[in-house]
Amino acid sequence: MNGLGGLNKSANGVVIGMVQLQLPLVETPHDLAAQTARIVEMVGKARRNSANMDLVVFPEYALHGLSMDTNPEIMCSMDGPEVAAFRQACIDNSIWGCFSIMELNPGGMPYNVGIIIDDQGEMQLYYRKLHPWVPVEPWEPGDLGIPVIDGPNGSRIALIICHDGMFPEMARECAYKGAEIMIRTAGYTAPIRESWRFTNQSNAFCNLMVTANVCMCGSDGTFDSMGEGMIVNFDGTVLAHGTTGRADEIITAEVRPDLVREARTGWGVENNIYQFGHRGYVAVKGGAQDCPYTYMTDLAAGRYRLPWEDEVAITDGTGCGFDAPTRTYVRKLEAAE
Image 1: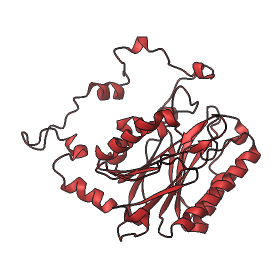
Image 2 (image 1 turned 60 degrees about the horizontal axis):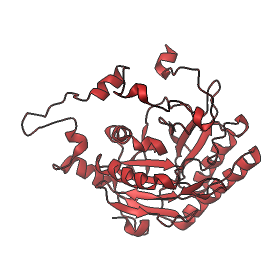
Image 3 (image 1 turned 135 degrees about the horizontal axis):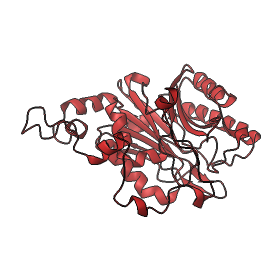
């Protein structure tokens, strides 16, 4: 159903290109400007590569590399030159684009941010990574939830970032809010390869949702990212997969949001996202709609605690060279009150 990588686009199709971008080394404002230009160049390559492509997706860390450098001189702002360049690239190439930036956060650590810009250069999605990859990443935990937007050709799209996808609740939230396509951008390296693959498939199947996933690729002289562009259909079938690890390759497929909608309304067996909230509807009218899950009720009440909580050895980033934090997290709504 991938239309030969989108070469044969159907009336209801959305063609997605996942860029296995060469991992950069970015240490200075000059490096940042050069990498911005490189990404803009790759947007053009995506359009030349496929006249039918609707959305081109760049991995997490596409702009900043994997150094975890929080130097304010190379952090971005939403009204800065990097985002402006990405907007213009989408206009110039008449294509939607998904990009990654590390955003300056006065008074706190930077946010790891994903954005989606439409083919008119308008910002359609702005997401702050909810689950930084602890203890390795220093980013501020996201505080905006998971937005879902209207995408190209009538699709509904959500974006999560890297480690987010290891929590099944993240994909479920995307689907629960109506996403038919969930993008997952990442900077993962080879040790995560197998868990990357099966979570991309399980996130799709468990929620009857297409997942479109991509990592950085190649080496920066220290780290080696794995590429692994992977587009998975709503039944868990892999439609396209970049298994060669070739940097700058664009993995493409056509996906069908209309068939996602058809499955969600028409499936009986394994319509998991519906059946989760309607337990045993064969036995009881409408199914049980309670919440029998202790971890959910405890988390909502602010008392999440594991039976082995006191034995957990790593609870901050000091082992990875970061200072122990002193600030306590305050939810955005609480801070505004």
